[in-house]
Length: 370
Image 1 (cartoon, rainbow, N blue to C red):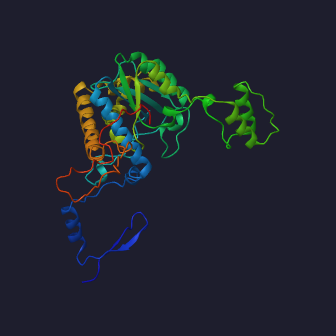
Image 2: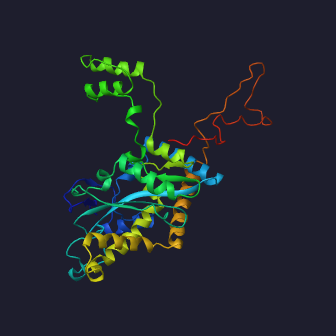
Image 3: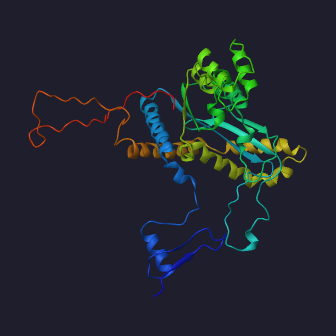
């Protein structure tokens, strides 16, 4: 029987391999299915999640999450951003039987884009913490909302909407977006990538005069020698000054954010009713009706839905902790090894207790940063 060759024809061939399998294609499919393989949409982040850097960040996140979870001193609040279009959320998946009659002529998206931010706890959104604003930028194909959010907007959002409406001591869990973690420029040492005039201006802001005719290397050295400042992260400072804490999820780990699932619930409702806007609000400007419909979509998320989603996501985090951190403990803090040179030692003595593992299994108090 000839060797089976698999080719990817649509889209155009990107890989062509011959595998050692003397059987038919359907037999191979059944074998793969029986041993636990199934077809899914390709996710390029799965590989990235297991790179050493991201795995280390995940390890740190899991330890910190368990710290807050076990201590119970902070309520857990989940914060995230997303977007919708005035003619739909842009969700492209539909139920279909393959016939043209059940196909939409176009995806429910288009028109102005609205950037959305919100924060929720164990069973609901925080009242008053919603932010919806019109995007001024025309989105490019495949673009997301990050180009429309920046540190200034997000800081104001936290200061005016989230923190004042959070009544209990909380840890805010959010992703690693740059505008969540940006550093105050005045406390950030200039680098060689910065223009000389900006380096001179940075020194002037710290009360030091510098000649722009100096080389960039000399100016950088002057910054390092003359200016000693502690880094300040405005969002973290806002949160901690209010008596709260912040925890950042690892990159590419959207599954650690319950609010991601909640967005799915609200967007499904929004898409299902977007065509009713003209009928329901005939005399209202479309942009205002969009905001009313979105607010209505948020109200469809019941406390029970919230609680179920949060319980499911936190159960996954706890499971990941048990599987990835629990067996190793705090491997970053080894115990000291003591060797008694005055006595003979024999590892063959069956009555002698095992040598303690030099890798500590006790969890030390981690700091609140990452």
